[in-house]
Image 1 (cartoon, one colour):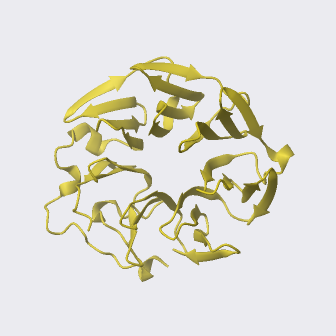
Image 2 (cartoon, one colour):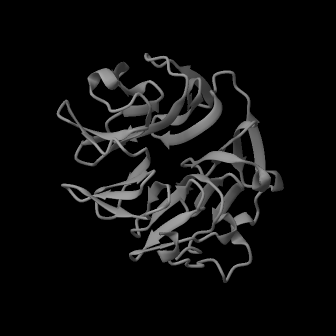
Length: 291
């Protein structure tokens, strides 16, 4: 239960640091996705306003026709910047956006995930999961054993095990074989936790895979675990309980102003700052302020 979670007010010593230096219109906007590239530019997907790029306090809109509508997820990696959402996928390389056509022609692309050093990219869509590797596509659907057509995210463990988070149930792909778990739950987001195992945000709380089964935490909350940092912290959004942070074995709510709103996305910047995309605007937790 939420009442059992320690509300650790980690930012008390700094007056409202989460909105310091942010443009006022981004504090008030509904921000669906956020990503920070290697140069420190902050990319923001805003409902009804598309994609924005923020460098310092300067905000520049990107209105390229290659971009999908309703940005749902952003990812920066060695192959460029990826944007997914309603209608498809776009990739930005050498300063230009290019549309990427998926073979399963999905109406919505919920997420994009990269496998480090492999060149493989997974896309969770309303018509299964699509894998792009070396210019070739592989699509997994219910016909291949997925428990539901809608795949919200694909998580790849360091050892190569692939988890597909579906609207009803979770699928594990190992050596071409699919095994299904918990078809009674809606699986939303996941990260590899500080214990090296997958942590799943579901309609039934947080499920931590222990190698054989799931340990359940955050009962009564729908969490979106998104980032695991080098200090062992896990940052999670949620459907209606704000930003959550796991540190030293305790869950806390580091931004009290967001406790009753949906937090869609979390990103860690190269300087250690944490960026938060929420129903109630963009927030930034400065480096060190969350410790």
